[in-house]
Image (cartoon, rainbow, N blue to C red; front, side):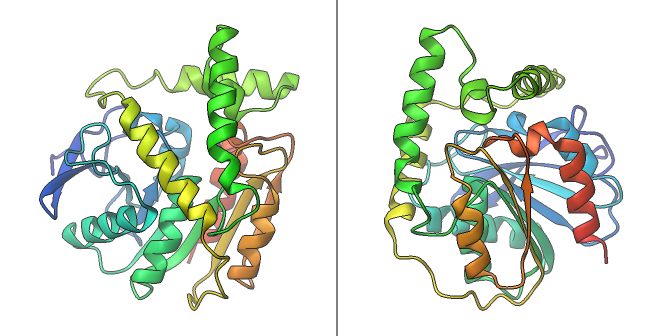
Length: 283
């Protein structure tokens, strides 16, 4: 780990790699060393540069945050995983290789699916769990995510628009402005950029989420730590009904529905999300 890691902001911190089962997984670490570490897992088709700097820096104010990549994505080598369970195995092995025995877990969209499987595999390691714009196995309409994503991407390209704006944000004035602001923030990091996400990554991850969506709805989780669920009210990729489905899996979880927000609710409402998550994680 470099001297910068753990102290620099998202735009400045170096990209590191950790050996995991014959591959090296890329990650970035920021925030002070004290406090319970927070491990964060990003959405489908994302590399490390797709983290919103406002979310990363906001969460790292007062705690150690580890933004963990996926095998075969960006500067993580090895073959990209084609199942959520394999991604969870990698994530759990990576945090253990980093020397973490107890940590909080933040999962966004597909990252929330990976986080759920990680909790099932290593419940003793996770203290608090945050699931944003995610769903359980067999969640409502998760099997349609591939169709929605491909259709939205094609329409955006034909209309000479950014697919992220079409897929992640509402078409209201507030949603369109939030999309522009988010896209601009993604360019703030100019050094040590991650490698672009290639088509075979998208194919593998879409396949993984589709199989996840076809699996039976899970029984009540045995995880007994606090759980926070956040979801946009107009999410077309992972419909809002998945928040209620997750609440059945994690009874007692707090559920927050963000208004006029699509799948990118965390980016559109980044201030509110950072405040809510920091409060939830506060010991």
